[in-house]
Figure (tube, rainbow, N blue to C red):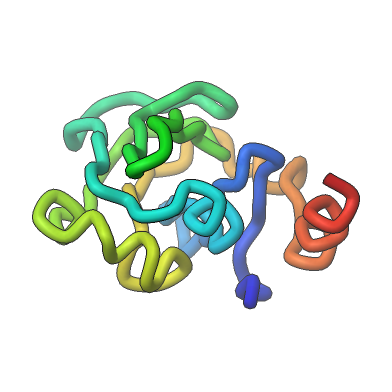
Length: 126
């Protein structure tokens, strides 16, 4: 369920790194806890993001939740699909429903994130 090439945070975000770019999204667990997602607020391209800091929010029928960046960098792309189809986050949180792409400023930050096995153990302990 949790892709092997992703790294995870305790706030239930994931990052997948290719070259100097990190693709960020929320985990299956996060979308499941939120319920039906109705709106996604994302930053504009060019916005700086910092590891552990909020860069947007996801609104569901239950609550509004901040999204925290697993890495530091600059937003180079946002997923336009979510502006008109926020429910995609419920359907494919680890695939088509990625949130933003970030040019990594500190690639070594990835080492401090959880592996899929660590994340699943964290979920089991939570």
